[in-house]
Amino acid sequence: MKTRIVIPLLLASLAGTACGAQSLSADPSAPAGKSAAPAVLDQAPADDKAAAVINAIQPDPALTAKLPADIQSGGLKMTSSLGYPPMNMIGSDGKTAVGLDPSLGRAIARKLGVKLAITDEEFNSQIPGIITGRYDILMSSMSDTPERRTKVSFVDYVKAGAGMVVAKGNPEGIKTPADLCGKTISVVDNGSSLELAENTDAECEKNGEKGLEMLKFAGDQEALLQVNNGRAQANITDYVVAAYKASDPKTQVDALSIDGTEALWGIALRPDNKALIEAVRDAVNALIQSGEYGKILAAWDLDKLAIDAALINGAQ
Image 1 (cartoon, rainbow, N blue to C red):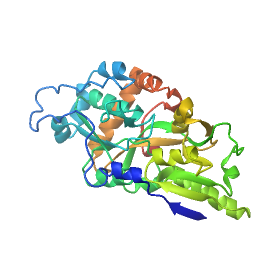
Image 2: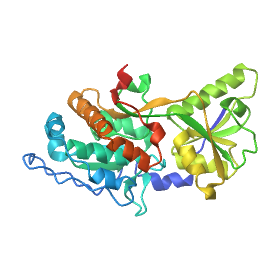
Image 3: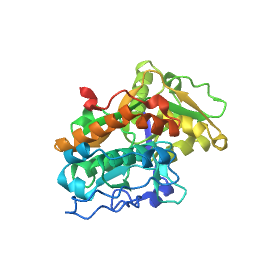
Image 4: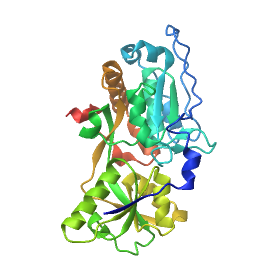
C-alpha cells in the first residue's frame, strides 16, 4: 500500500478546529441557575430545509425533567464537522450550521425544551471534546463502532452505507471496491471510509493485485475535489454524500453505492452521563413516534436513512 497524506492549503482556513473551534450557532445558552422559567426555544434558520417542522416541535416537560440540571439551565452544546453535505454544512450566511445533523440536533433540543449551541470541529477532535466535557453531544455522521464505544456511548439515529464518487460517465468502469486495485483513491483520514479503503487495499494485495494508492485528507470536501482534478480515480465516502454531490450537474461526477456496508450512525455522548444519554434516546424516539423525525429526513431527501427506534450502542 502506498499512502500519501495530503495537507492542502485549504486546511489553513479550517484551522479553527482543534485549537479553539468557533460556535456557528446564534443560540446563546440560557443563564445558569434560571431553570424555573421555560426556555425561549431556538428557531431553526431559514436555510434549514426542515425549519417549518422543527419550529413546530413542542417541548416534553417529562423529558426536560430527565436532563441534568446544568443542561436544563444552560442548554446543549453540540459539535459537528461541517463541510459534509447534506449531513452537515455551512449555510448561505457563511456561519450557520445546516444539514440533516443540525436539523435533528435542533429537533432534539426543542423536544427536550432547551437551547442548542452548535460548534464546528475537525472530525478527529470531536470525540476528545466529548470526553473532556467541552461538548455534550456529537452529531457528525459518525458510525457506531465497538472501537468508538470504548470511549463514548451512542444513541443511534439513522442507518447509512458507503459509496464512491467517480468522474462523470465512470470512465474507469468502477463498480465495486474490488475494481479499485491499482488505482488512486481519496478518503478522509479517519472513520469507516478509511477502514473500507484499507480493507480493500489488503484484499487487493491478498489476491496478488496491486494495492490502492491513498490520498488522505482531514476533510471530506478536499477528498472529493481530487476526483474533479483528476488526482484520484475514486473517492470513498458515505453514499448520502456521494449522491448529494452527483445531484449537482456542475460537479461532473457520478455516485456509486457499495452493497453490504449499511451501518448505524450514532449521537456520541460521555458514557458516564447516563441521564443525558437516556433523555436524548427518549427524545429521538418521541420524534420518531410523532412523525416529525420522518418529516425532517424527507426535507433533506434522506428518507432511506430512517430507523424504527433509537437504540443505545445498537442495543449491543
